[in-house]
Image (tube, rainbow, N blue to C red):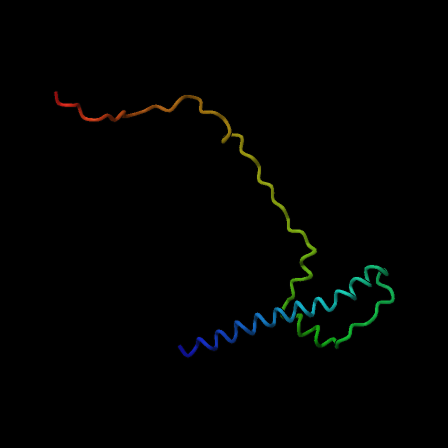
Length: 102
């Protein structure tokens, strides 16, 4: 029971660190848009020190990965599964009800 508050504190710290990393990545969005428009020339500097970028880099913001499209895998269709059976199934044992006493 003594570990529960410690684990909850670590989980909350992780969530807040991830949110802070996302907000930091969004702070670079304006600079990235200007860089894309101008072709990388005459880009204004960011408003925070480089140490802040390095600190949030350790959290690994996933915002930069949104531009990548995942690889799509197309599985081949098996033709054997679509073919009809060569002969009808054979019934080995045809069960019936017991005879009615007369």
